[in-house]
Length: 121
Image (tube, rainbow, N blue to C red; front, side, top):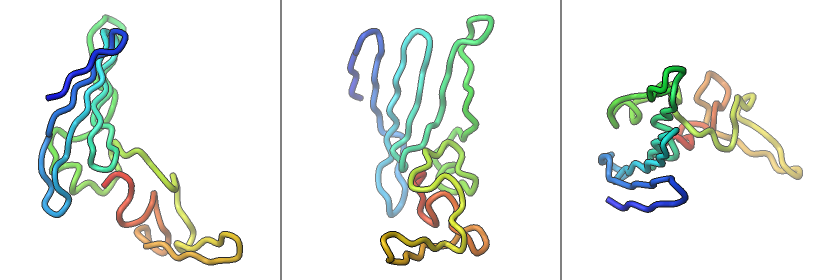
């Protein structure tokens, strides 16, 4: 495990699991006295964000899974850092400087959140 201290923030890095065909998935943990953020290297998935609640207790405010399999099989983009497109591209087609591009469609006839292999994978 790698640990770095930066201005009262602790950064840890650890292996979290293996995905067949994709390899190792790591978890980066950024933590201070008020906040803890866990980010997976399966694309860029925010696993959790814990912050102090009204009564001072740490509470996770991100909807997600407890294990790697949940993220690998996820169809709803839980925790996903949305990349190229944060919505639908109609019919999976767009034009840039006169050249038409066709994306993979994964939402009926449309491309949703980056297509079949979005930034969450």
